[in-house]
Image (cartoon, rainbow, N blue to C red):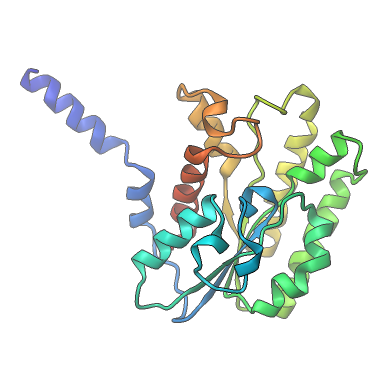
Length: 243
């Protein structure tokens, strides 16, 4: 390998920072010592967590196998003196109305200092399967009401809204569109209205596919992430949240 080639590779590596590099450059999120961090959502967040230990903060089985597991370990390792208490209360199959029905017990009673929410795929998927008749506008109204109630009950909590995502493979076909895009945009608008941190999962997965990977590499059924997909989500979440 000649000197010119080495210089070219070096310049390329410098010009395209990794997600972890960009995360380190972002201003750190200021959370108090002993802060409670809560992950909420559907099966993507649930990821086979053990309900029997859901009240045990930082328990590996409580985190499940998905992005909260990645994030929990990374955050605790990077902030050993902060004594954070991290919980995963995602439940498979949940839609916005399901979150609302259990929000007191599974969110407000925990008094979280940071609440990360990924919800919305089942609101469409169950509709396509004939098991739900909620419209995009009901999704907007329900999500907005849930977040308004949260801000009133926990005015100092940091809200993180994660972008719903799908990849065009497995269960995801043309019937999902354009309504999926409508609902994705609603989630972004709701996040902006309440001043939440926005984590653009769908945008990032789209970019990953355009770079040359197959959609199934990130989510085999188009909805539920693979191990690589969950890891990519965790990297992005830390970049955007700054924790």
